[in-house]
Amino acid sequence: MKVSVTAIALLILLGFALPAASDNPIVGKWNCVSVSNETGTKTAWTLNVKEDADKLSASVIMAETGDVIPALEPTVEGNTFSFKVKMNPQETVEVTATIEGKQLTGTFKGKNSGTGTFKGLRAE
Image (cartoon, rainbow, N blue to C red; front, side, top):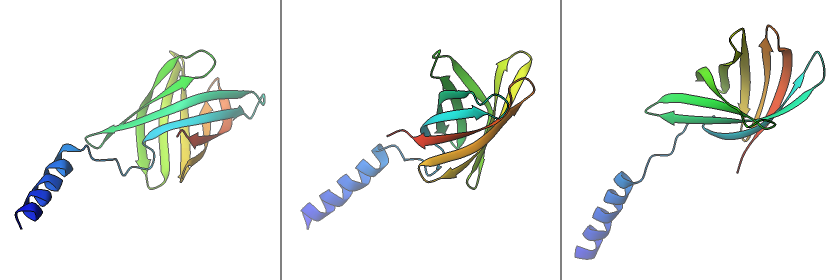
């Protein structure tokens, strides 16, 4: 009986010591490619989403340059994730994505950037 109580106590302690995994489906790293509606230009980028104390933070890393751009106002409602990216002082791009398991599909729009679509896959 002593072994069982000790084992249970150990499991409880380990449960408290391990960080809780996020249940939020957007949290993680996503490899994305966007396509401009106006020019057909394809742009590769990575979306990195974190959650700390139920607060989301995100950033976009441009594949070509390595530039890291913080995402503004990241929110998730159901399977819809949205955020904004300030590309320069005059340009803010709005991004909306649908989360479908390990895939993202979405749209973007900005004053100078125009509109377009993108797809992403969760990085393993």
